[in-house]
Length: 290
Image (tube, rainbow, N blue to C red; front, side, top):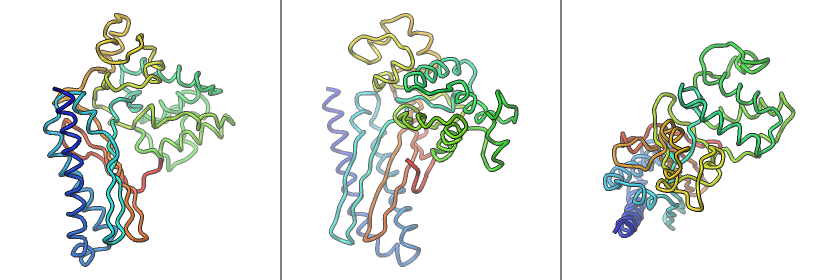
């Protein structure tokens, strides 16, 4: 029954995307007369995709149904040489690195980082972790020499990691200070996301990757899902602290919506962060760095 509902949801979303395609092409001409084409198209795409998400997610109540939503939806038309893809992927199946600043959670994220950095052979894992901690706090006190980037770059922001450009500044700073470019080999976007600093979003245990389970030191058997992870008593404290649990309606769960399109010679790359709890787009980035 759940599989049939999930399949129906995926088909429904695809049909709605096709309706979006017709809508964009139908009113594009009037938009470009009123404002610059890139602004008009971006605004139209964001509003249209958001509207479709609002209509779709109201029927999502569990992990199985939610997973059917994720994927890449291609759009194309000979009218105006319009080509686009809309990609939906979960963020709340990864580690919110900004939660490293939260008491009670930070020891488990520290364990995650220790295992991850050791696995990839990072030369000075403690210095890198201190860079993250000194970025996340507001003060200018260094945990160790040169770990407070803002003291050496007045334009560097503290308080949280705001974007991937911000994260890559930390990676680049570490690589230069320790002459260790191995830090760039870590698949950061597959393992972490840049969520809110103070919100306790869940991590869906039915969507965890093998690597994240390994770096969290979670006990598991051949199958990784909520049921099997809960079989091991030694997992309980960590899962409770990080809110590793299956998605249910009303829980905070983050989705990334990537929109890439080309219209004639114009290309745009837009990223939206959408929260299933608030049913709102929380962040928008145009031409984000990946």
